[in-house]
Image (cartoon, rainbow, N blue to C red; front, side):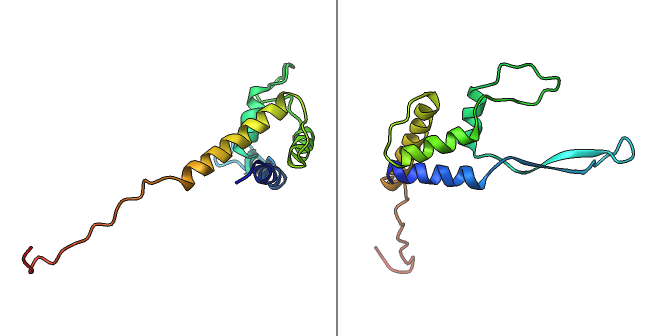
Length: 128
């Protein structure tokens, strides 16, 4: 696979998978109308990893994760990389590294000789 193909796949993943949270009745309600958040769809793992490496500097009242990474910036950078342009910045470097990792992983799967050899069974009634 080529880098442009991987950029295209990453762009498609980012478009198809976005964090989506719904409210559902609590399994053990503590009060009337008690609801809990349930993840209906999550971001791609590679995008979550980049977000975790770039936390926002602000303090929040709750413990929810906050990041400096903006999805629109990732989409723009992936589109530029796919078009063969050379965007700069740390996010571009991380996206290039992720795509290179994917290409290397795909190549190692293509050239892997780990399949077991078929074992021929001989009929036990025939002499050797």
